[in-house]
Image (cartoon, rainbow, N blue to C red):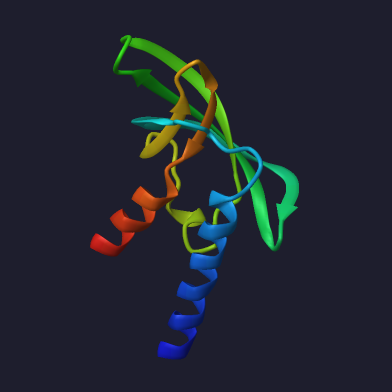
Length: 115
């Protein structure tokens, strides 16, 4: 049992490292919290993970402007069941292009460990 958990944790860490170095990075992302408005599988995969488009709504706290954007994510099977419409998630967005959004996985993982 513990071996399985250790393997799952190792795979999750590998995913986070790959995700952090991937091409579609949000550079100088501004952190905020978004609310999931909807999600749908794209039909694609990243490794063995399904790719999902999450529609999120958030407010840029620096300007007070509300935005709706789509974040394309390939969450681990460990996290996928947790995502629900109406759920608050930490994100990073590009201030000069708020359509560029990504989930803040380091915060999500830390939040999971704390609970």
